Image (cartoon, rainbow, N blue to C red; front, side, top):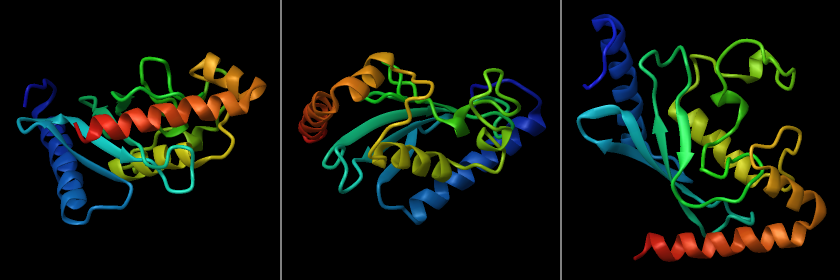
Length: 178
């Protein structure tokens, strides 16, 4: 492992991540797949999320990365889509903005209850299911958007928003099979 830290914490972190990876490999769940970017680094995962059925993301194949901190599971990983995305809760650079990926504790802006934020009991599975739920919502959360332009388009011209998403879905499907 190319990480520093106390030997005990690194060993327990890697054991936990290895266990979660093994579980997802042995018992894959519908809607996503996950694996390591590099077999020698348990802290960087590659994820493929399949667009949820009956949503505007249906038919899409969305690549993302999960980057785990050295103090996982005390702090959340970061998730960034590599596939271009258009969603109010996904920053233009692909970083995902959902409550369970926010550091534990009180929200300084008052948007979230501490129970909605990261807790060490969350797993890769619970993170990815939350992202799938985010993509499945008919109406994205516009309260504190990560992508202001996408949020503005949802508010002002939902049809244009959906058209842009469908175009990205088609492109993602084409690229997945190239």
